[in-house]
Length: 267
Image 1 (cartoon, rainbow, N blue to C red):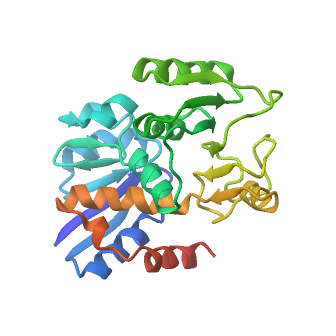
Image 2: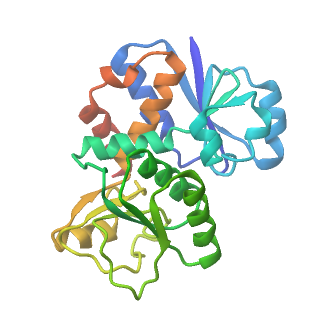
């Protein structure tokens, strides 16, 4: 039986085992998936003793796992973060998850004017996805200007796309807004990004707990198209499964029943 896991700290909240076990159930695969509590000072010994067939990586190890790997795929190298490991190679499937989730919801990213709220690891993965999809422009809005400037510089170094920072005071012209901050995440569900929503916008949240954040609820009330983080969570997990099994597992999965299982865990 193949053995997989997700490592991180804290890890108790992770829904990855629910996601992957449902994938294995649907396809009748002989595989197991566990969550493993690995603190920062335990990463070295975990990597030394690890005998898993593959594993996902979450906070706080997405960067710190890199020195222990033999190789990085191109996206992980450019993004500077790994969330999937197989045979000593580090991959980043977060950006794939974002791209696939947009496809799943009928959003064509090409030539969109986009705004990313936040400038951390999730923002960088989303920015990479936007670059790969040939958006027209990327604006960054972040509480700490230094972090926003760092992300802008990284985007300029990796693309020819028009990019800038944006403050709360400026009126927005973007049609695609992606929240990559923890604002609105359980248990602080009333927190929302400071942003004036317009009805012709597409609002995307990388948060999946709650399934629909207060920010998305407000967007829906104003007539915007809203997409929660659950689709992205599922599609990045399916991309990991594709890597681990060496075939397009994602093409064989019934997406809606998979999503339903996860929703039941979140309710």
